[in-house]
Image 1 (cartoon, rainbow, N blue to C red):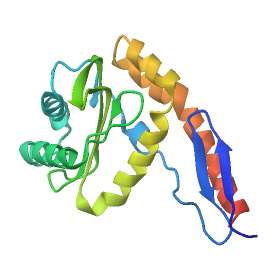
Image 2 (cartoon, rainbow, N blue to C red; image 1 turned 45 degrees about the vertical axis):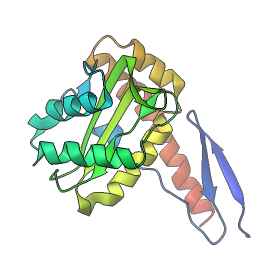
Image 3 (cartoon, rainbow, N blue to C red; image 1 turned 30 degrees about the horizontal axis):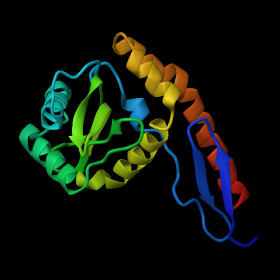
Image 4 (cartoon, rainbow, N blue to C red; image 1 turned 45 degrees about the horizontal axis):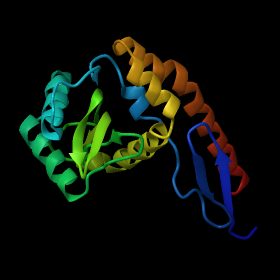
Length: 196
């Protein structure tokens, strides 16, 4: 079979798959969503600037014991975002870094109903925070791919925006979206086998 373009419809987006001699241009694994819990979800950010928001997130998740150097983590995140702010669609942002400041992968989610100014008049309402040590760089790319799917789901973001507490936010991620993510993953595996 020659190389073709195939598209798989999902509730989030259309997933691009290379067939023929090539395998998937990128796989799909769930890491970020599974790692969310009451210790790394902030219902409402108090900070009014991007820098304040990052400090608030790091301070909140510092008790997980995975952060070796909070100040270095802050600086690495800020420096990486200065190079190219990770502004996604639907008012979502993804501050992230591959850094020695953490001992293992660290994630967090934070919401700002009013929105926090990021750059060029753009505001962030949904903060998907990710940091990994250098030896887990691949996990960073996997999580970035996963988050890119999530932010396309306007229904999910609407539920998060309306959430009253951490339980509501975790319910939106785990109980309502996890089954869809699992089904998406199963479909991708079947397609990979079909076009291998």
